[in-house]
Amino acid sequence: MSSELHTDIAIIGAGPAGMAAAIAACAQGAHVTLVDDNPRPGGQIWRGGPSQAPASASSTFRQLADSQARLLSGFRVAAIPAPGQLLLEDPHRAQVLRYGKLIIASGARERLLPFPGWTLPGVTGAGGLQALVKGGLDVRDQHIVLAGTGPLLLASAATLRAAGAQVLLIAEQAPWSQLARFGWALKAYPAKLAQAASLAWQLGGVPYHHASHVLAALGQTRLEGVQLQLGARTLTLPCDWLGVGYGLLPNTELLRALHCQISQGAAEVDALMQTSQAGIYAVGEATGIGGVDKALLEGRIAGLAATGAVAAAQALAPRRKRQLAFAALLDKHFALQPAITQLAQPDTLVCRCEDVSHASLQLFDSWREAKLQTRCGMGACQGRICGAACESLYGWQGSGDRPPLLPTRLGSLLEPTLAKANPT
Amino acid sequence: MKVQLFIDGQAHLATLGSNLAAALAGLPGRCSVSGQPRAALCGMGVCFECRVTIDGQPHQRACQRVVYEGMEVAREL
Image: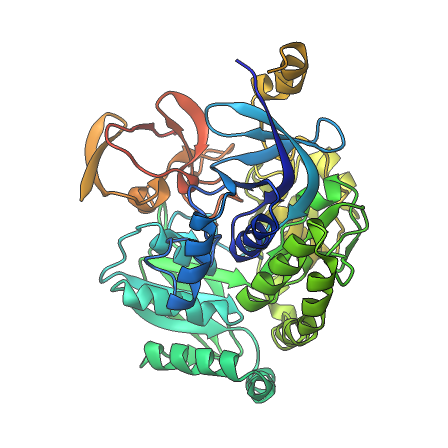
């Protein structure tokens, strides 16, 4: 059984940016299809759905539900059979989606960097642990340590505490001088400052250590404890979960596969959010890490621009400046300290899919060479985790993305041919 | 509200609406190519560490699947 879907505007990613784009495009009367890999809309920030999201999110959820947008949850983009077409796959079937314009709201993932013991069950990303709790993970009375960098550590700690966990401490790698400058600069963003103050209040007595990082996760077959560098001293603590994340990285695989220009890891866009490819737009974290307000605004601009409401889109465009300035602030003040990229020991695995160690990768000069010799980056995640790690540890740049973008069933790859043979 | 699912044939209760990686709570779902136990890392569908077999379909990401009554999970150990 083969089928092909048609739509005016295809939107990839149903987080805040994709939702805002869908709402704006639908209001213009366009036929919109919103495709998302997750079981529910909301992206990672609103992963738990409207009931767990802040009140400010509920109107976005409601407007999306009230719109005519067709929502394909649980579908991922597997390949690009031809220009203007995407091959989608869910656990059961594959479908070709033909579109007029494309808006990519692919969001971000965490930068996860290797340290001894990081492959033990119980060690997750910092945002990863938050995502699991939003997905129903029971952390009541569990002892948790969070480490890494950036405001996500605070947000994650607040979610964990609200779910009944005992957050033992937060280890932030940035030194106090950088954090103080970030705090000072935040005064230009009263809403963000209020958010930070509210998080700080929710965190009550959780110790927050700056210039601190995880040295090793301890345990045999599961996490049992963590060794930390807290300023000048080291500390070993027993814990049930360890969440470690070094900031966020835009998901650019689909953009790269469509030959959209990428600069500094994010999609290059014009004032109306169009990429270097005509008719392909990028919004939200995919254009640079800046948070939910930037995502909502960019989604709206692209939804309008892609449906021809150019004047309305142009009127919103100047508001981006402020959001971009905030994004630059995040980047600058949470830059990684050199110690963070030197935590891996010779036997620490860098590529977790193919179990490739730091020692064996150090022999190579480039991503491509390492890939050919060790299979680094050639496993199930297709280099999504170790690619960023190799860039941080060895300075290697990725070698571009080719479809299929994810492990895909052979039957799904045949779908475009079947669809052509049996048009519906 | 709880649903009953089966992990390697053993009945488990999970909260309705939760995802499978959350329900597994750090229980390894697979072994790496060198035989190490692995469980969810990124929690959002990127790393593929949490994959398991669901109702006979191999290599499904547990973090991207909502639990349902009668779900049969086989760990890939």
